[in-house]
Image 1 (spheres, rainbow, N blue to C red):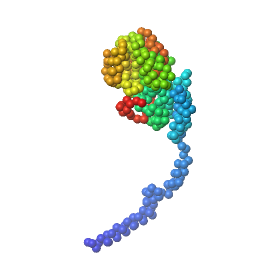
Image 2: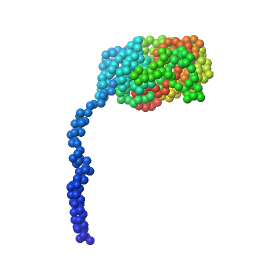
Image 3: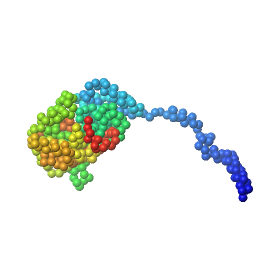
Image 4: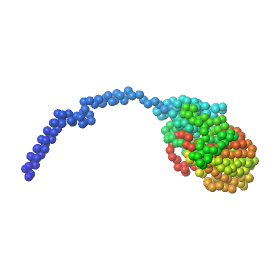
Length: 400
């Protein structure tokens, strides 16, 4: 048996040699190989094609900057330009400044008309609100870059509070769709109608403010967007009485000082219609409607509020004197979500506030006038904002 092994091995070797020879002669080996086919282009031709292919066009960003937030405005321009051009895929930024006459609306519309890929707002909550007012309902994302006193929307989204890091997030972050609140001052009968709240229909509809990718939203003159909170009564009086000089000198503490002086101002009679329901009467110091609930200093006024839940949170604060205010303060600081004898909370998609006498109204820190009737509505997930990712709730509470 052992004598036959060399013979078998020799036969197998011969068959293998014959098989290889036949394969080479017929070209079978070449047709199956990765590099042997004579019809395959030379490797250098692939390199040549890659070298000749045009580079993809660079992305374009429009930056709307509030110059009142900077001591050295040219240096702020240079910082923005340097931060953007550190990313090779982005072109030279288009920088425009807000003015007293136009806090960001026209600049945002110009950016949309120019077809940019991203619009960034550098300033406080007022600048962010003006830009968001235009971008709502469009497919163009917005970068929120903090340079103001409150920066409440940025804080609620866990965004950086410095310009270079804020630009970094805006250029490289992910898109997040958030809700936008809309306020209508002294609505006409059609604007005040609650027909869309008929339960036999599909449910509440969002406010009709229009939207076009080349022009932005197109609301009526008495309709205003807000990202953080809107309020009337004491809330608006504090905003109205706090000067820019005080905010520059004291930061958000300026609002506290002004609030202390106005704490015992006159209360007012009001009726609230929640989602078209029966009126609820209050004698209030202030009514606040929020898209998000966290304030500066880690204070949470509306514990259940989220920026993308399609719901507005409402707080009616009704204390008579110092003792009542003390109870409200303890309740809020303890982050208790339930009602208090001097603080009532509601959640809704639409609320109509009727007053016996005109009251000042503010949105995101800017007073926009007086009104006797105000309607608040939510437009769910209608604004695209660049964020760095999901931020834990405990981190959101840690404000600088």
